[in-house]
Amino acid sequence: MKKNTATKIPYLLPILFVFAQFTYAQKPGIADAIDQLMVKNYPTDKPGAAVLVAQGDKIIFKKGYGKASLATGSDITPQSVFRIGSITKQFTSTAILKLVNEGKISLQDKVVKYLPGYQPQGEFVTIENLLNHTSGIANYTGLLELRSAENKAAAKSTEQRFNDFNRVPLEYTPGERFSYTNSGFFILGMIIEKVSGITYGEYIEKNIFTPLKMKSSFYDGGNLRISKRTTGYIIDEKGFQEAPFVYHSNPFAAGALASSVEDLWKWNQSAVNFKIVPKTTMEKAWQPAKLNNGIKVNYGLGWSLTSIDELKVIEHGGAIDGYLGYILYVPEEKVFVAILTNSTNYACVNVSYDIARLILNHPQKNPVIVSMNKQQLEEYTGNYKINETRFRTIATQGDRIFAIDGNSDPIEITSFKNDGFFVKDKPERFEFLRDQNNKIGALTFTRNGWETEMGIRTNATATTQKVAISIEPTKFDEFVGVYEIAPGFNVKVWREGKIFLSEATGQGVYEIFPETETKFFVKDLNAGLEFLREDTAKVSAVIVTIGKNSNKGKKIFSSPKK
Image 1 (spheres, rainbow, N blue to C red):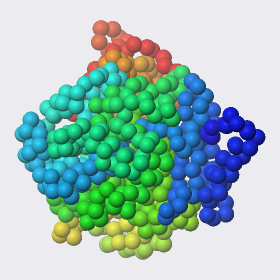
Image 2 (tube, one colour):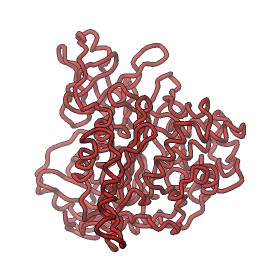
Image 3 (spheres, one colour):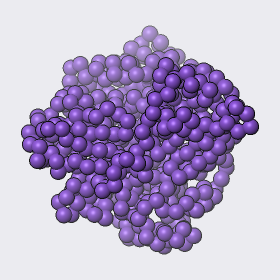
Image 4 (cartoon, rainbow, N blue to C red):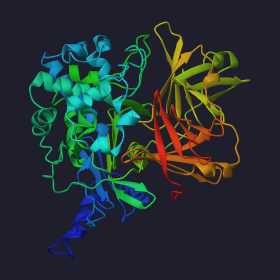
């Protein structure tokens, strides 16, 4: 992000500021290399990012890029404040573990002990299930009827928000699968309030922010006391627009905190040095969760678990309207990277890993190949269920092995360790997981950090996967337009050559594939669009389906700009 200019001695202070930023570097060229990565992804005249890099107890590099506000032209600095979205989960988890350490709750307590009004299945859901995303509770931010700008901005109480998704049945038996859900951390916030007798925001302020002197961090309940907070932006057909307002009870304990990269550095130092919670309790957060069948998943208690080559990484990303952020820590080398952005530029994940590799001197390279014969490879073949409509298939061809995902071309994968495979010249990793009987029971796919995906091995065939048909691209033009699903929540559909695209308000752009001449699906999500002709021969509406939820929207505009 950008540097603030000084009003006194203007010829001197900016020079000193630049010097201060770059003398943190301990290795020749590291500062320049980090700076080049950031400049490439965050232009000076657009919403940008703040970055902080540290190793051990020393900050190596920190700087701001781009604009904190397009309206005022103010620059981003390392002190700028951003909404941090799901990075909040680290704080919520630590608050729960603090209560556990104090003997006030147990990880094995059932949700209904603290929330008697929770749906009947709550008697099977434990606090630990909530922390490691194995509860089976539907993700409320994935329910289409709750995603409108109007609902997000509504001044609802946490109880009203809770009731919005409390009616939804469990998607699976707790502990059977891993499925990331904000609902679990929302409920954890309610439990913190119930046990402590104060609000979630007050608890975090009192027990974490104040003791750690995190003066630029707060529960973002519309609090304007922080002068250096940034404005969040989304991109639409008109360019950058201020992100719609999100009332704090919507993300709550799953994503309502705001902070700066400097404060997140203080936070990480306190967490890994056990300043808030003792080591015996805190280290549980960084151990992989176990499913009922003994398979371990790449998530602990509020922290994602991944690796850079053979080095363990504990990390988490955060996304909330107009903001994205990512922090990672490599315990063995004590390397910390934080990037916070005020736009929907997902580069922060890959850039974080690129920076970490620079500090670690671990350039992206192919691992040493471990040879396997056809018989050994056959153990991994089969179908792995990602969700109700999507599988990943592993198949062999002679002594080669491939991963097949829906309509994508097969990807050849190569063994580099027992149960571990890589894609040549890319960060993609496939890891096969064994159950308590030492049988392959699941498969995880990882790019960089926060992008882990799990599939459970199944005897079901992959024939339920949707298969794309071919249609004449110009036939798609009658579907092009904007559809209003709810006030403030629209779905845009357009074509770029032979590629068909859709985007919901505040969400990312997804390629859609034709299942029939009027039905389309999203390859990487259990989602789809069906276009309708109601009273006329022209397309007038769409049905948008995400999971088991469907909503209808009327066409309100026929030709959105790309």
